[in-house]
Length: 212
Ligand SMILES: Nc1ncnc2c1ncn2[C@@H]1O[C@H](COP(=O)(O)OP(=O)(O)O)[C@@H](O)[C@H]1O
Ligand SMILES: [Mg+2]
Image (cartoon, rainbow, N blue to C red; front, side, top):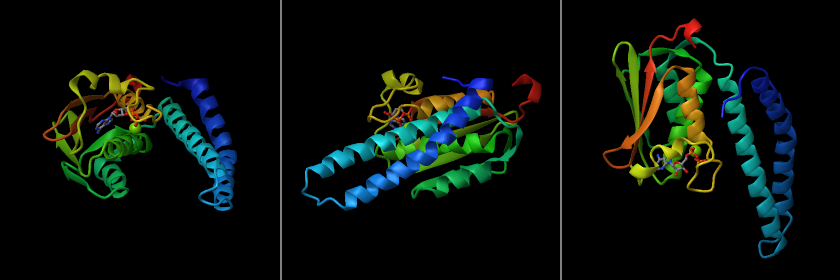
C-alpha cells in the first residue's frame, strides 16, 4: 500500500478531518462508561464501541503514516535523536552503537518506524528491546532485537504484508516500516534473534534527492 501524490494529500486531509470528531466520540464514550455500573450489561456494549473507536483511530494513524511516505522529506537526521526519542516512550529499551551516525531522510517517518518495531516487541510479550547501530560507511545497519517469543521462520516474510496480524490488530505497522525503508532506499528483514525476534534495517548514509 503506497499513497502517492494527490492520493497521499487526500488521505492526509481526510485523516486530519476525521481525528477531531473521533476524539470527541472517544471522550464521550469514556464519559458514558463512567455513568454505567460495572455489573450493568450495557457496559459491555459501551466497551465494544470504545474498542471499535480505538481500532478506527489506529487505522487512521496508520493511513496518515502511509500518506506521509508519499511526501518523504530529505534532511540530515541524527540517529541518536530519533532512537532515543523512540526508546524514551517505553521502559526496557536500550540504544547502543554508532549513534553519532546520520542519514538523509525524514525524521518523523523514521521515528514512527522505530516506534512500530518497539511497540510490536512489547505487544508480542517482550520485556526488553535492544537497538544497536553499526556504521559501514556507505550504509548503516540497525538491529532491533527483543527477548519475546520471536517470529516463526515461515512467517518472517508474511509479517510485512499489510493486514497481516497475529493479535487482531490492524496489521499495518510492519507494512509501513517496510514502506519507510523503500522511501529511504533501505531495506528491512526479520531474522532469528538470540532470544526473540530480530529486525535488521539497512539505510544508505547518503540518499540523493534525484534518486528517490
Ligand atoms: N517483535 C516481534 N515479535 C514477535 N512477533 C512480531 C514482532 N513484530 C511483529 N510481529 C508479528 O508480526 C505481525 C504484524 O505486525 P504489524 O504489521 O505491526 O501488525 P500489528 O502490530 O497490527 O499486528 C504481528 O501481529 C506479530 O504477529
Ligand atoms: Mg504493529
